[in-house]
Amino acid sequence: MRVRKPGKIRDQLWFLGAEESCVYLLEGTNESMIISGGLSYLVPEILKQFEKFHIDETRIGKLLILHSHFDHGGIVPFFKRRNPKLQVYASARGWEILRMPRAIQTFNQFSYSVARRGGKEEILAGYDLDWKEGITGIPVFEGDRIDLGNLDVLVMETPGHSSCSISAYVPRLRALFPSDAGGIPYRDMIIASGNSNFTQYQQSLEKLRNLQIDYVCADHYGYVAGEEARGFIQKTIEVAKQERLLMETAYRRIGNIDSAAQELTRDYYHKHPDWVVSSEIVEGVYRQMLRHIAGTLSSPVEGKRKVGVGQGKRG
Image 1 (cartoon, rainbow, N blue to C red):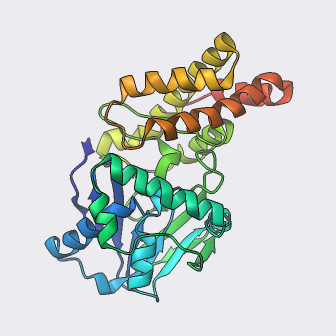
Image 2 (image 1 turned 60 degrees about the vertical axis):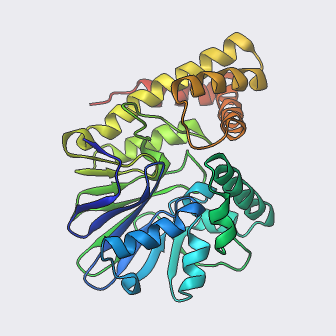
Image 3 (image 1 turned 90 degrees about the horizontal axis):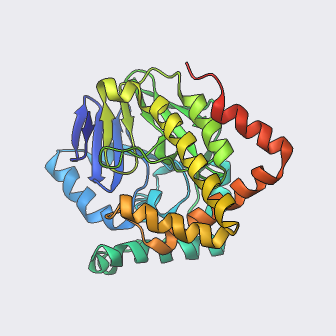
């Protein structure tokens, strides 16, 4: 079952934000924690949701960024400035990226681009939402646990969508927060998004496959619950295999990364016409993925490694 309307998922767990950009709230006995930072223009809607759902904002002491892309950390600057004591967590690589002036510039530029695309420029003008140098936080690593009282949040390093990607798992709730490392539940499909290194992305999916899951809390297009959630990662593994084959085929046929990226982008928007980000961003992502794919096709060692991931035993 897929749910795209913000609201209460179950005791101690809320879906906030919007369908296209999701933020989650865990309520422990000691304090609450926001998981994922969403798009910047969500801020006023989240503030309204706090009031609508009777969520006590003063209990929110932690925020976990699952990776450093602009559409997954956009609300962080506002809430960190609103509450300087807020503890913000991200992977070590995530903090490394978020200290880079060029990365910060791109982060803010893309946030404005998506807001304009959605007709939400006035929201950005009304709030202090830019990411600026000086925002710092706590690095987390594979196996770390964040204690919220009666809820432990387990950190798993799941690179591939980005070099800084992590996932969060809450055993007590059987809830997985994979961000874009675990498949995106768009409409009735699953989108595999191995943006930076498709081989690592597939390896990360294998890492998540055997978790006991009742909820897959995705960062885009809501959460998946029940029986579908329990098979979601396995289905994403199969989708990733198909997506890799599609890119390999396009690159082999066209023989040029830029031209292949343009063709794949056109096909992408034919299948996903209301996708939240611009075609320029998607085309850039395809170029990045194709550079990795082209490298594995030209390297015998990487090629063998790729076959092991894509065609290995799955059940």
